[in-house]
Length: 450
Image (cartoon, rainbow, N blue to C red; front, side, top):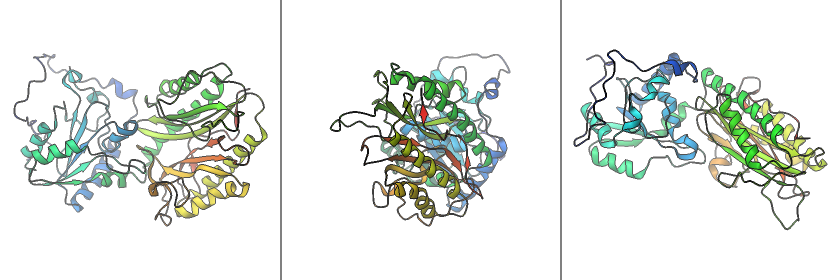
């Protein structure tokens, strides 16, 4: 049998037809025009990934991998699917990957597959794309390929915040019922290990995301004025991303408020806030501060940026001093995030300017990033504080490799001045042999609206 030949789709019993007959012109095929305007990874990149994955499957005795997608944590639940198949969707995305046959993708409900599934027009990595009609149909496909007694890896998603793989209990239980003699094993880690070091094509995607992120910096500075609502500033940040080719991914940890306020009235101005806590229709005022962290998404790849903006003409000296230390920490980050350096050497060096100034921090370090965030490894807290997946626990001797990519987390404040006001700052860095490559070019001066 030709291993490249597509099998006839297997149908689980008692399935309704997808829709009434829908005749199409003879020879009609999905348009490929959208591919000219959407980010694309090459077929060579696909073949490189698939070859590496199949070798790992053979070593791990996996006969197939079943990808169970969901939109958990800003759509990062499909990060591993995007890595292997170069497809994305919010509506029911599943995939099966085999050692010796082309993969299959199941996506979306019946009406989204008329006259065809649009994933055929967005990429060329996968050609066998079928409507999703439930796990029983997928299991029927696996049985039709003789895999009902095989070792099957289940692929969800995990990160240093989402530490438990995103395999939904109900789906796993249904798979056990449908495939009672199969050995079902979590294999999410297998893909995530492959994603540790980025290829130059992946870095190219991140570089483009960084260019868009830099435009967002300007959008904040140019929009924030007394009387403008924080919602208007927030909206302009998102508009700038989408209008410049970024995906409509609204990861924007944003906060604003007055620097001067009663000591007994706490504001949340050390780090940005989650949605829907922000944005509100509160109008900005003179002597307000904006702190924000956003992820610009291009071709699925996330570029991390943090920045601080002062609303007014003359920022307080203390705020300028804090920002200066942030820049010092960034410069050290660029120096130490290089191949051959251990994580402990990196985080200790990055924190020295903060400690020397007598300041404190909310986060001070770095986290890996690509199709997900925060990826492994992540070090943003002091040892012994916060979650162990975020504080360097047991990974101090981990050695950086060229091609790893990191967002900086430089969130510093002066507790002797104000315990609830600080600065956020970062760039996005690629580990290189002689020091990090910065992809955003975040300004080295505090944002001042004038």
